[in-house]
Image (tube, rainbow, N blue to C red):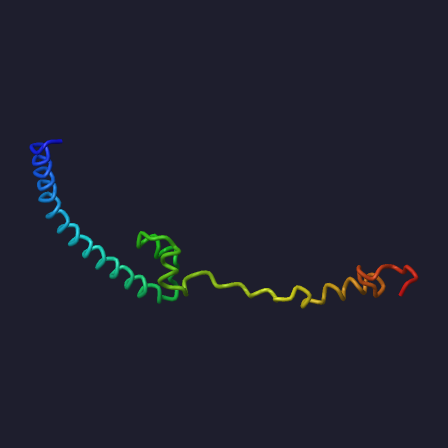
Amino acid sequence: MDNKEYSAGLGELRAVRDELKPLERELAQLQAKVDKLREHRAEKIRQLGEYEKATADRLATSAGLAVIDIVALMPSLGPQSAPEAPADPHATGNRHRRSARRSGGRRADQGIGCGTG
């Protein structure tokens, strides 16, 4: 590359810069408008989500969002959590008692009678 090619390259670079400036300004304005509309949409979802018959799927379709996005804004519209299982699997002793009655009072781990015990 010589001095002439370098100068021509700088001229091209300035032209690209000059073309980008107004586009970046326009993009910033559009982004601000998008952000404002998204906030308005979120507020509308929150308002409509308070309605007793509101459902996440209907709101999602109308808003152009996924159901999970609606539930993130309005957790009350999400699936209700199922009752938690007991932490200790042996806490439900009914199964052991029923099987012990059927097997003559013995549990499966007690054996039938080996003469030891």
